[in-house]
Image (cartoon, rainbow, N blue to C red; front, side, top):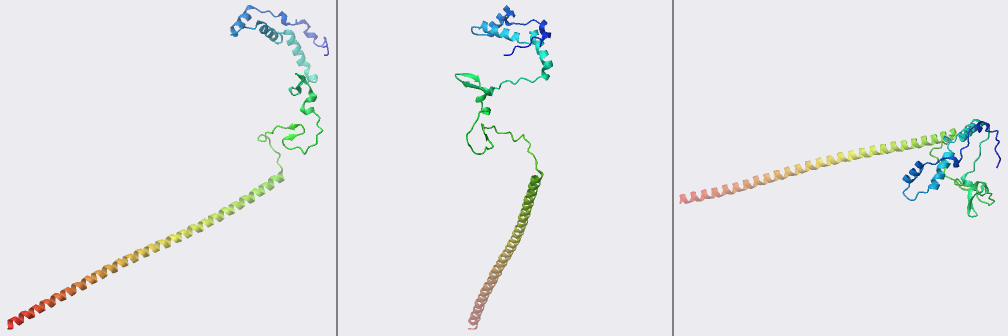
Length: 236
């Protein structure tokens, strides 16, 4: 590890360094620890956390605050640090070690395989992209061809719709014609029934009159014979 240059932060030499051992612990902290814990309190652990928190605080540690402000003034003139990522930490030899060569992106693979697909690359499976929020590039030729296809499809559907409508109109006209024919047949049937009833009435009336005439003629004949007999009796 490189030793820092003492003249680099010469401005902060007047500020005293705050160490963990110099942080005073009073009885109020003991009381707070006792109030927050329901089981046996771990005083030493809480003391250590309290000292560590106070020592790295920019509000409490004036020396750290001064050095941080000086670093922020000159940080744009330097290259920033490249911190190790969590992906480079691997479990090896019963412990977690920083091994960048063991990461998938740095691993050398000499196996032969087919062409890479949409969900697999040379390192393994890749995440599925969010295509919903990604805007695709628009090609005018493809858009015009697609528009022409859609227009032709729409015109075809409209023609089919018109054909269906004309067919429907023909069917409706045919249905109306059949209904009119049915109505005419019904009226004709009603006329025939009325004519039949009229003929039956006329025939029954005629038979009754004929029968009445016959009975009247028979009665007249009987009366004439009776008169003749009476005249004969009177002559004798």
